[in-house]
Length: 160
Image 1 (cartoon, one colour):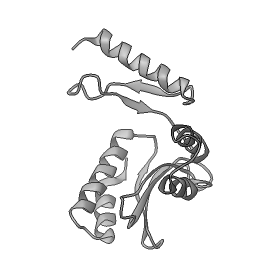
Image 2 (image 1 turned 60 degrees about the horizontal axis):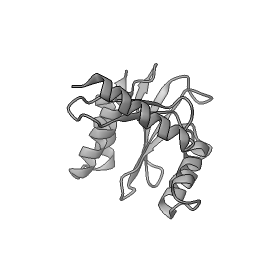
Image 3 (image 1 turned 30 degrees about the horizontal axis):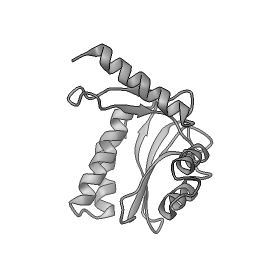
Image 4 (image 1 turned 90 degrees about the horizontal axis):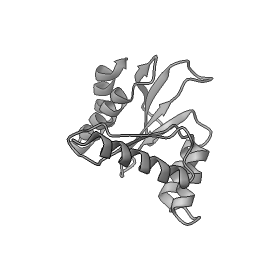
């Protein structure tokens, strides 16, 4: 593994992202050494910043599904949203703020019920959040009901 080459790849990727309007606090790293050259991008985006980046990537016009997602996130404390293609449920990561001083991963059924906080964290832990999102996607793909997904995620996630 050539560490210098990986560092150059990450630096160049970050420079390209900044040139396209990404925030200065954007960080690029290679986490999975199994895949040389693959990068991970870390940045905190609220709905307006995300919308700006997406509009720039789509020549000024957002596709309807992206516009809908941005509209759902606008005005919430959500920092990240995950919605399967079928839209049976949504997972939103909420940062500390007016509602809570903790990081919360919330699952909402498409009809608004059931609603559950499936994970609570005192500090931001991307690995735990990634694990929970992957588990939700796997359970959903295997045909679990939304109620079952909630209960399993709550048992797995709890408080980190």
